Structures are given as structure tokens and as C-alpha cells.
Length: 208
Image (tube, rainbow, N blue to C red; front, side):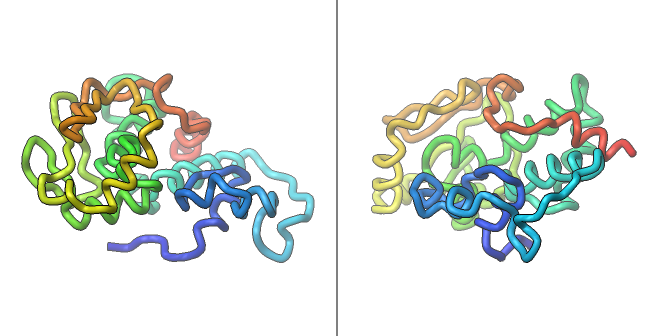
């Protein structure tokens, strides 16, 4: 499966904001987005006039990079969002939020979505008791995501759970710290998604 393997700090700098792609490093003074707050490349510090299309494109790229998906997959989410009742933009973000790797990240088992993707691929999580190793698996209300029994004794999870003990799970997830599991209460509403993106611009871009 294709995936981005380049320097992730360049992505944050290109979008002009932190996308928290590198875990702990994003919270330190070593963060490249803070140290070099301008786009990468030879002309990164130059003045650039951005067109309407350019603004829309940047919003789409920002969302893709934030959730760690590539163009073809992102477009499939847009098509599915447009078929569902309600606002297409909010449906799009809801679909991206309910990816299994994002749920694992939101629950604090991983410091970044890239790490969460790897943990899911290695089979550390179950959905309704069945092991699932597909990061793009979409959860829905009524399902229960849990750390597998075989993985609970691993030092990696002990440290990540302790480090993220202060992280609060979003309201659409009901997390049980004792069983290391979370039930999906509902699909996330726009007010429960803290990602600063103008989703309507993405819809306008794809509608051209």
C-alpha cells in the first residue's frame, strides 16, 4: 500500500501550522514548524499571492496530511460523504475521524497517527473482540475498540498509556481505563472535531 515516506516536518511547514505528525517532538522547542515558520524550499520565505483555488487546495492537503491518507483514498471518502444525508463537509470529517487508526490515536495509545497506523497493522487492537489490522477500517456506533489481551503486558503500551493519562477522549468515544477499551457512542459531530480546517473549501474544490 502506498504511503508518504518523506520528512513529515516539511508537511507542517508547508501548511503553515502544526499537524502533530511526529508525536512528542511537536510539543518541544525542536519542532520545525516553530523554528522555521515558513514553507520549505528555496522560495519559502518569499511573498506569494494565493489564489482562491490555491486556498482550497491547501485546505484539502492539510486534511489529507493530518489524517495520513493519500489522494485516491481521500477522494473516495469525499464520494462516500456526498452520498450520505447532511452536510458533505461534516460527513467527510466524520468519516476520517472514525478510521481505526485515528480512534487508536484519540484514545492515547499512540503519540501520532502514523504510530497508531503501525500499531493497528501489527494487530494490537480488536473490534468487538475480533482482531483488526486495517488502519482505514471505519468504526460505527455500537462497536467496541480494545487493546488486545496479548498486547497489554507490553512496555510500549504501559508507557504510552501513562504518558497520555491526561488526554481526554472525545465525547463520541466512551473510554474505560480498566478494560483499556472504548465503545463508539455516536458518529462525531463537527463541534467534537478539533481540527482547524475549512471543510467547505474542500467541497468547493472537488465540485469544480
